[in-house]
Image 1: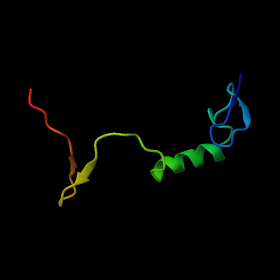
Image 2: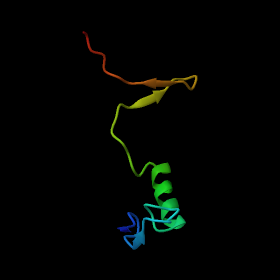
Image 3: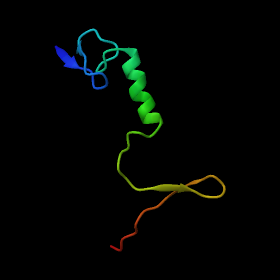
Image 4: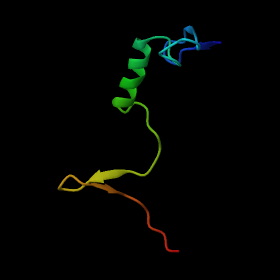
Length: 64
């Protein structure tokens, strides 16, 4: 099966491709770098850190 690399848009094969869905290690690392630099984001509740470094979630509380 032929697929397009999501980074460079070149055609690549799915079978026997250790970097799938990418065409190469380079494109795989470009994608990883985008996640690490927070270029890609998943929507959700924001979090903040307390003075002692603990993570505090900023959730809305609802009465049930």
